[in-house]
Amino acid sequence: MTSNQRPLALQMCPFSPMLDKGVQALFDVVRWDTLAADAQAAFLRGRGAQVRAMATGGHIGCPPPLMAALPALGIIAINGVGVDKVDLAEAARRGIGVTNTPDVLTADVADLAIGLVIDLLRGIARGDLHVREGHWPSGDRPLAHRVSGRKFGIVGLGRIGRATADRLAAFGPVRYNGGSAKDAPYDFEPDLLALASWADVLLLTCPANAQTYRLIGKDVLDALGPQGFLVNVARGAVVDEAALIEALAQHRIAGAALDVFENEPYVPDALQQSEHVVLTPHVASATIECRKAMAEIVLGNLQAFLAGKPLLTPVT
Ligand code: 8YV
Image (spheres, rainbow, N blue to C red):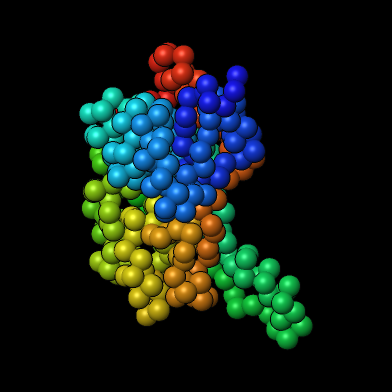
């Protein structure tokens, strides 16, 4: 089959080699993120009407003007669980299928959340730097904080929140907030400020949406207080980053561990320079095993779309 016989797809971001190859086997692929603005505009004028599919990341989604410029778009296959960067109502109105990769990344994201809690309180990354940068002979690191026995507040007890809670329960009591009480062996705290003032560590595992936009602002951070820690593996948009930076600078919270940011991949200098912050570059699902499982779902959805069969994991 020559490339011009294949349906046309836009790929919005880099993928693993396996997913790259899989998408290229099905479609004539245009890597949208590698085109300059003028090349994007020229592409849309020339071939925009032929694009049938989009393969994208959870953190990228489909920008609304691009969706509007692709009249034949039939599927947006997200390589991720988050659907916050896709206008689902508009996709439904136009009959565009939207798929994500639930379940297969739950354990990996929860594992990273636990890693961030331990690093934040025990200073693993800071200790590593202390050794590597040759500071150890001049003195020890300051004492860290015990993890075991801490109180953990979870914002959003969906699949990832529940898996995180189950792991944290080995360390200390867990309570949660978000939506309604779930069938779970943890106390539901309907008041976010009460949860933040109870918790030693507040973990964010909720989806980003209109209800959770900048949910964690000055009031919640002050309720968490000077001995409290924040961990975010959800989305940058859930936190008011300026309020967080101010709370850290004024020692109104003890520290934060962040895998996600408002303007990825750019991280404010104030966060990069703070001794009380642990940073990871949005890697919660970035294991070989997880990305392979995610890729299989993305490809399965794209194949189903091409075959006119029901999608494997439609977002309802
Ligand atoms: C990925 C994510 O980093 O699942 C999500 O929503 O944000 C992450 O798992 C991203 O989607 C990779 O493409």
